[in-house]
Length: 221
Image (cartoon, rainbow, N blue to C red; front, side, top):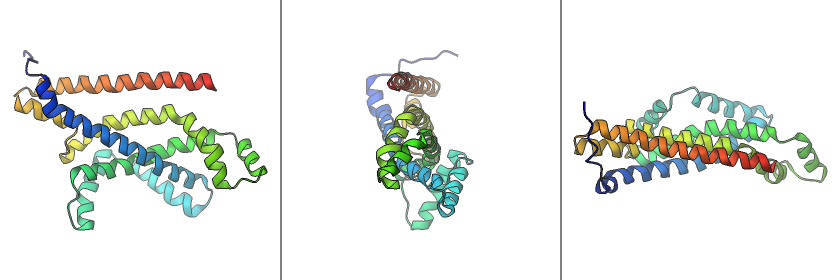
């Protein structure tokens, strides 16, 4: 079978591909920021030592990490409209789902980062009169974010790859753009091959940047 990529032109990119890429990037950034924020709260809850905080946060993290993402996407897309009494829309549903789901993974990363900070520094903070919140804000969390930054960014690359799963609910992401382009020009195989190449280039480039960042952080230490 002979492949023909002649259909691929700038007008095609503007019409279909860029629209999907924009949504995939927006979804990645919003889910990353929301996931890190919620994940940090969950990590602090699990490290608090208080059962009424540890138990619900542990259940949240372990449950979501044990369920395939595509199932969570379908649950939120189908169940939330039933609870609120109106349709939520594929874009909003995708943002909520990815933020809630990724928070479970970012939580474990942040927990490891917080635990990597020497306890002696926290003790020194208490010795000069700092509260628990001040120690976390001024001593622990800044170092935890720096220590875990490469891992956080790696998880974000995985998040970008996972955004293609919103295809299951019909959201217009990067993969959907390629699919529509392939159907309109009757070149589905070529469209999917180009989609794979684009995902590879983006993710591989970001991985190289994360590797360089990791080296710089190691030098600073």
